[in-house]
Length: 343
Image (cartoon, rainbow, N blue to C red; front, side, top):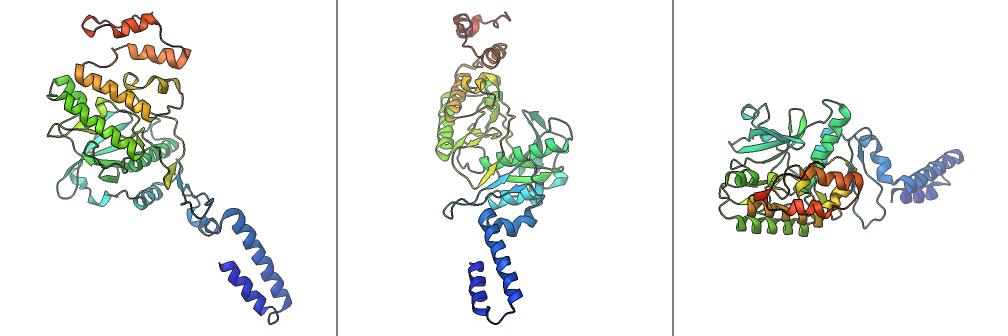
């Protein structure tokens, strides 16, 4: 509207202003009109403030559609934190009692390190930091920041008794980290291995309800397995670790494509193993849920040790289906079991 007002004022003043000044003002209006048409006026006004931050705001295609903020591996930490806060994720950095936080990882797994921490007031929390693949390489730190932000944003959409609550995020030891309640009871995998799971059928029912909730909410987990399911002190199961999560509904915050994912072959659907891009779907979640239930009900992993590598070889390198001989070996009772021969 500003350009229209300026046009009206110029028309009204054209007889009162010197001719050279009128010509200059006309040129200025034309330049603004062309620039606003090509780039969008908001992008022009905000270009200086967003330059160098790695924050990309595409011009809206239509006024009825909300603008989408795109985070990349070049986006700086302070900008990522601000975006997450604007989208409902809580920054708990100032609530962290650093004097009572472990300086060394409590445990490691997948792509992350877990630290034991404490919030002001004494609440124990788990602090998850995604670790670099290539040491301290700056580009890799940027990718890890993007992975962390994507996991925080996906996890923040969940509010269900079968999903571990995400409390927020913190800036910890120079990087962004996720904060969840400290689960002293351990993981479902530990419960199965130690024979502590007294009501396996109830656990299966809880997990099925949680996965149904995720899919209805528009979240594909992408890495369901006993390692990523934590137990409460009351013996209830809660799904955690949304590092592979995919949001299936349009959102106002988006992320550039990430090629690296972490998954366990024995709990991963065959169609996912065929794809180099690791495309996770609701169907692959259901497959992973089924293999997890098998583990719960039998106390045995869904695929014997060594067979997972063979599956990966067949699907990923040769692109072939598995032979009848293999399936006879695979489906043979575990009590008889010995691993499939390397031949």
